[in-house]
Image 1 (cartoon, one colour):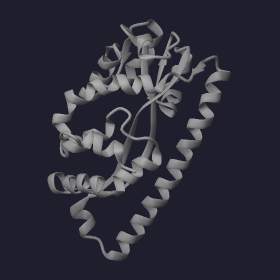
Image 2: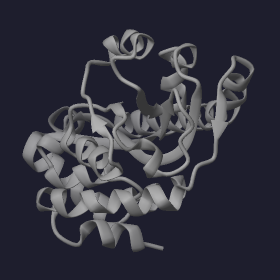
Image 3: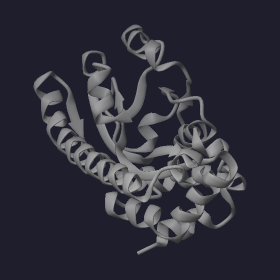
Length: 232
């Protein structure tokens, strides 16, 4: 959503750009992330008070998937966002956008064969009832901004700003810890509910995903993906 005002931010949803949560935070708190957030203030008047970890996205399907070859021709529900569509095509899948509210029934009826989402979202959507396999592709990790009107923020006293910032920081820390715990525990719960959890060839998925990058980098700027990926 924010990337419509700060196009560079769309790179944050690129497949396999972040190695882990620590890498994501290093980018967002560093020069690159701060420049993007400043652009959001300048273009839309929104100030980020912090970044939440929203989980890493995985694949679910009704057949075993271990490599991109297994996804070829599969009707894969993805959000109607160019990056997700191109990633699915790079895997050889047939990207099928649809509203999230329609997804459970579509999976149940076979209108689509598979979908991808963070594990807590897979749980809340009860997709374990209509999908046999959880495939731990870990393909996208999306930072979520906790934003406030910059005009409102600047109208607050320094003391009030400090109180709000401390509350946001505390809330983000709690949310992140809870979500990470859910990611670890829910996969085991899915097994108990009949799903098979597969550890696929993640490197094969990463390599396949790279075909999507040249088609999208005009939006965020040539070389930015590589710069972020290489950050240590």
